[in-house]
Length: 100
Image 1 (cartoon, helix red, strand yellow):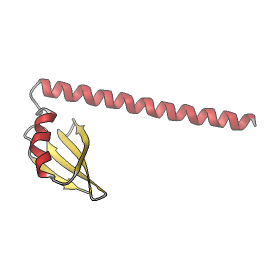
Image 2: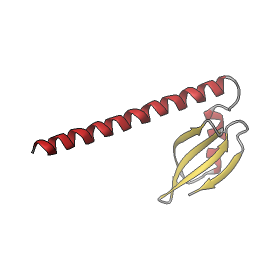
Image 3: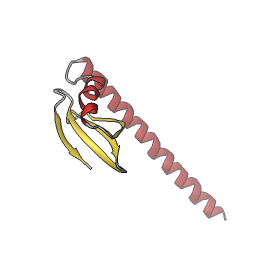
């Protein structure tokens, strides 16, 4: 019984540590995006969305991700029960590709 409790507590600790690492990574991503935007290296997300959203009619927009190292926004959509990703150059706003 005690070993099961210990195992449960250890697993809970690992999950909490993993969640904390994800929160820290997300915070660093936001900081990098803020700095890149402030320096004029990337376009504002709202401008990227204004260019891309009209081109993806009939899809629900789920939100963005930014790969700051590559300088690419990934916009996530749901259409006909499938996830669709649109990769956009963060500096120019040019659509680089689509994937599903």
